[in-house]
Length: 399
View 1 (cartoon, rainbow, N blue to C red):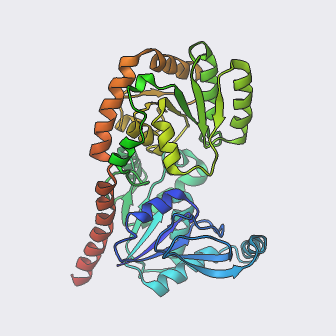
View 2 (cartoon, rainbow, N blue to C red):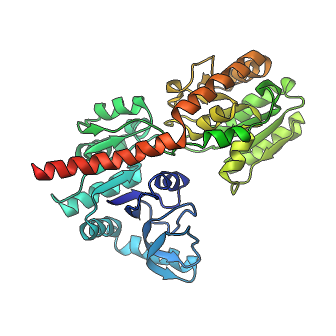
View 3 (cartoon, helix red, strand yellow):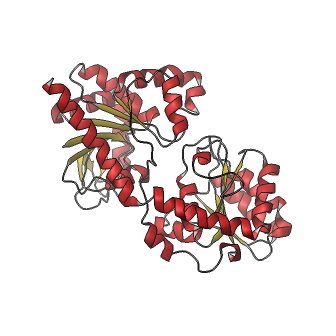
């Protein structure tokens, strides 16, 4: 089977998705949805089509890079800039050419605002001989951007033109229908793949979760992330934090500054987890944490929430994600408004005072992880998606 993916080539989520199908012997190709000239080091057994890229781009075994390779990333950046300036539609034509040349069995755009829009433009160029098209909704693609005037019509056009739709939340299935999608909905499960649940258990701190003395905070502060709200809520809980350590990962510059001031004002040890940390290190930190906090105004199922559940840490998660499809509010986690530090504070206080709550939640969440997050189960579902789409295409051709 030949599959052409349109996705962010430097994204760990893209790399993790491809890892689920990289051992099938299929012919995998990736046209980056954003032309950044970078390939995630975890990308496996796929041909990636850049325009200009630096020769020092390190890749995993079996991954091939195509495009114009130059010695310096600065020169590559200039080349990409020139293309954008003088040939603004070059990405659409590059993708259309790849589709016409490769004639893939399936085209799969992962994410809508970059990959979906780009694939739609390519489909208009290619015309009627366009392969079956899967659109995957990432995070806020419809839930947030669907409320913005700039994106409403574009989202409708993508959903009207594609054949299959996949997402992480039942919420987003309903939203796609509202936006006019009338094709086939694929199974709902996390886009980032599953976990080795048994191995993860060996990385958890021994003993009761209530004995742990680390609090994890997702440090995004941007168009969606609200790490500063979480830090402010922790500051309001300073009277309960003696003996605790705060660990902040994915910290934005604003959060780094605020964290330093927080540590000085509260005397609570606070560390910023380096951006280059391995995924296993983040899991181990969740496995040492009593509470994991993730706040944002929009998301699908947050990977950090699933990691916290897997590792026994009590999740405090914004109610603007799909967390209600995974946790029972007040029982296996607490859902909070992402911009209300007072409510987040109350949730943190409860999680720090109620040992039975966090210990009971950890037991229930690991059972759910074993049932729904095992990498073997999710890998089989990912493989099944492509096999189904290809088989249905062959059936249509015979009839």
